[in-house]
Image 1 (cartoon, rainbow, N blue to C red):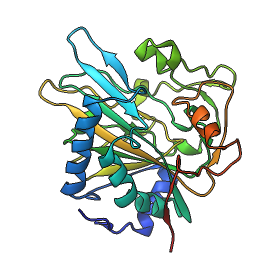
Image 2: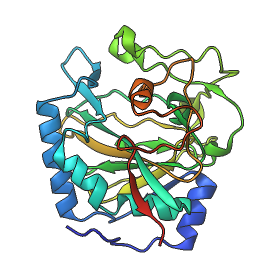
Image 3: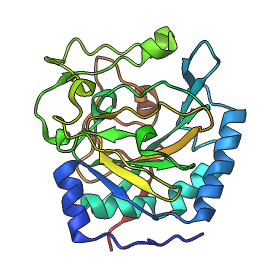
Length: 283
């Protein structure tokens, strides 16, 4: 497996990432990395962590499985995080001096699942804040454009604080409830009502492709699968130079504050320690 960039990231792509808050990058990971992640995902599904959830299950038995922070238990995930080009990709896109790993999350939809990811932004859920937060969304199977994650370009620069979706409504688990009522001053836009007006973008993708997007970029809509097609996605979250710990008195999802405090981290600190290891530095 290749630990170096398979494709050069151009200055134009860096500019597009900062302008739009989202960028499609094709053929960035070779088949060995995809096979490794599929092996890890199989192990993850067979032995989920305590943080795993079934976000959606319909009357026909279609499911949407989610798990997070499994990298400490899944060796294949760990190998990808520390040895793949992922950290370098995010470092170059963010023009960062250093990159720390934040967390992993997997999403597995069974064939025929119609459940769509609700529109949201990521940063309001996190116990981290900062512009320099980048997610890599990697499908491990071919994805049609209609099934892929969709984005509102430029939405990472909006100043409004929106009332984000309560993902606890999907699981019915009281531990998953997220309350934004103390901070939100505006309802989240109804993007599905006028996709064209919001300039929504999505792409047909193959394993090895990835989407890089800012933690503040509005995204959602993946799903709507045909009966013969599943969806397996591995995501990693990466933190650049201005990212700092921020404990909130309202719903953090996933809430890593207790783990952070065990490591001696407090609001305002640079994310570090073995919980958020430094993976890449600019030469």
